[in-house]
Image 1 (cartoon, rainbow, N blue to C red):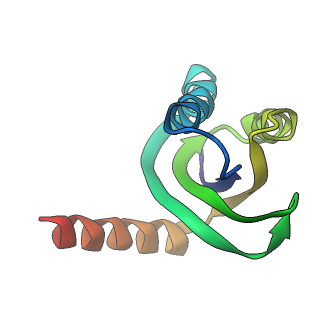
Image 2: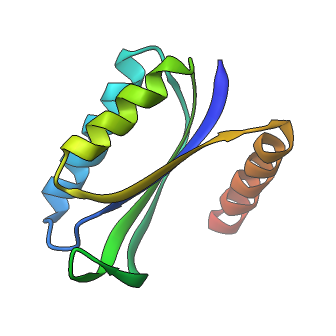
Length: 113
């Protein structure tokens, strides 16, 4: 099982319900194929560095998960098929990136408490 991190940007014209449905869809897609979710983050509406599909902002979401390598191709195909997704990026994390992500999550937890 490899560690991965995926960031995807959803269309800013979506309703709160549509955003939640989309996030749940991709989470269920991963877990149904044997992936284990490590963390999820909703970064909210952010301004884009450049226009995508004539939009200047988008809803950012982050998934950190462990999964077999063959799932990633199918996940990215699903991202391409869904018109609500404007952009996505999946990266494999090495041991240093995994430990950095854990420290970052702990920092976020301590700030919320």
